[in-house]
Image (cartoon, rainbow, N blue to C red; front, side, top):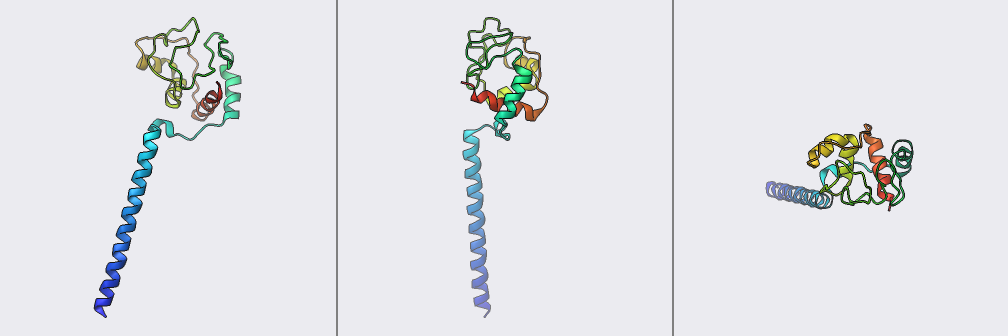
Length: 151
């Protein structure tokens, strides 16, 4: 009787340990796959494209166009996502002239939160013409989602 109890206990313990190791391995593999694809800063919840279009219309369209090669006070934002910063035909770049980074969700997030601080930390230029901030995190995610749709 004692032997049967011990064997049963050992079997349950073995199954529990194997299950825990399997789950831990799966979690590590899932985490590895996610971090290989997306940096930590870019894992924020996705924005709403329709809400972003409205934020763009109200706050960004005064200075930026959504159409390619249509520049206003600021450069066209068509195709901005995935593009090297400062690389359009816009003639009046200040802080982004000669920049060496790509616009990603995380770089756009940081830039829209505080353009001047972002430019100072990512270029050798101390200035930018872009002084407007998008302080609301949800609105930044929304407008970034909208910018991703512009080709």
